[in-house]
Image 1 (cartoon, rainbow, N blue to C red):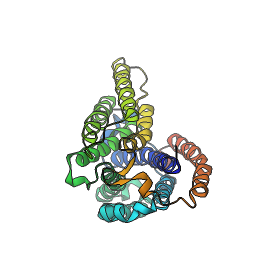
Image 2: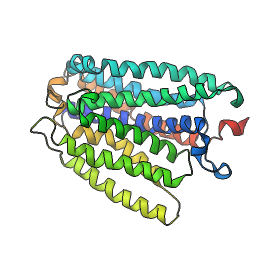
Image 3: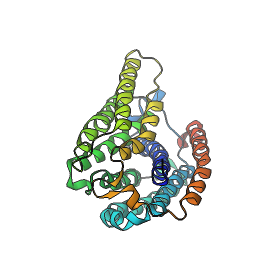
Image 4: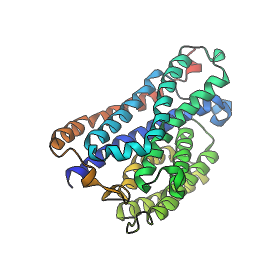
Length: 307
């Protein structure tokens, strides 16, 4: 594995962590607006909503900066293609931060549905804007120009809903259906489209293994749900979300932008790659810290239970 490949893996891991956390945040916003999605009131699952969830953005920033610094030779081409998409995401990021503080310091009765709806839209817009940017890397076109791009956006949307509700709802049938739909799009429809991207590209073994494991675990999850035993779909969803960015980007290796820009040509950190990679590897323990904070947040009582 050369420096370019190692850089791609590390950046993908950071975006994978962000994908997990932002999906749970989206689930909180979703059930905040529509409480019935959380399940019956007597056993409704509600996570704590606190400004601590903003720690999620640390992984987004690290991933974005790492990508920009390490693949600087391709930054001009990529940024010109995804500028409009990412602009939506950054505006949503600022909007979400302001709304998070407003909602946290207001009583439940003072937060209107319009504020909750705007909060939900901003939660969804941030990860979906980065999904759109990823669609450009995987297809060489902006997401609205190809069927594969739209499939990736659909997969991102379904993934946010299924993981978000897995941690914020007791409606297991709804979660399982969303999760199955997500996996069908992510693991079967998207790879089939990617195999035809760029003419000579074929879905390689990392993605094939990902598809196989996903299918087997989906079957096991369905059996588990049917038996009414304790559901572990949430942990499976976390694993799929974490590995999805890496598996998909490896499907177009050795390209950074499918059919247009190779990893080696885009990699602009030859002179300082070792230093940057050493710093990023040293920062990887932050992933463990992030999951620890994540676990603590999952155990905190919900906002309306603390007041």
